[in-house]
Image 1 (tube, rainbow, N blue to C red):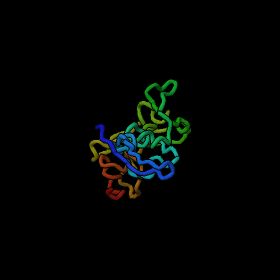
Image 2 (cartoon, rainbow, N blue to C red):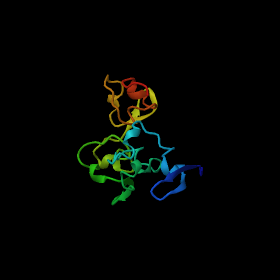
Image 3 (spheres, one colour):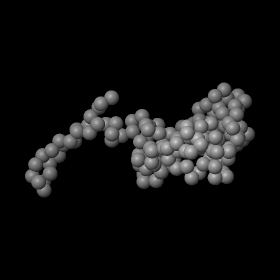
Image 4 (cartoon, helix red, strand yellow):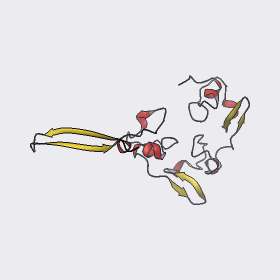
Amino acid sequence: DGSKIFIDGFDSNKNYGFVKAYIVKELFYDECIVPNTEEIGNGSCYGIDPYISLDCGYDGEDCGIPKALPGLPDCLLSNPSFLGDGACNEFLPFNSKECNFDNGDCAEPTAVEGYLNCFVSNPEWIGNGRCDQGFPYNSFDCGFDGGDCSLP
């Protein structure tokens, strides 16, 4: 929205005062909504959505800008090494139609009975007595893993 922050001070080494203006959106990720804010800009790429979104500055610039992959032009990843590695990465963007459901490592997500907008690869995990922290299991749409996880 163009909001600015102004910081003033005095440089005693050079003996002069100063005022610096910063655009708020360049300093803070005000549109970035993540469960673990300490992961943003901590020096390590937390390469899953929503951390690797434009709103989160691609994990506070810890991750590179996502790029399309050969053969999967709509699959945008900053670290493709986990794609098709033999283990299902349940989280987005890996487990998506665009990324061929982790390039075949995950089953195509299906609807979960009783949760209209909950689509997961392992519906039997919903409400099984164990909290599956990852999205989409631990989300509003999936009833916070069918009640297995605490409300945020």
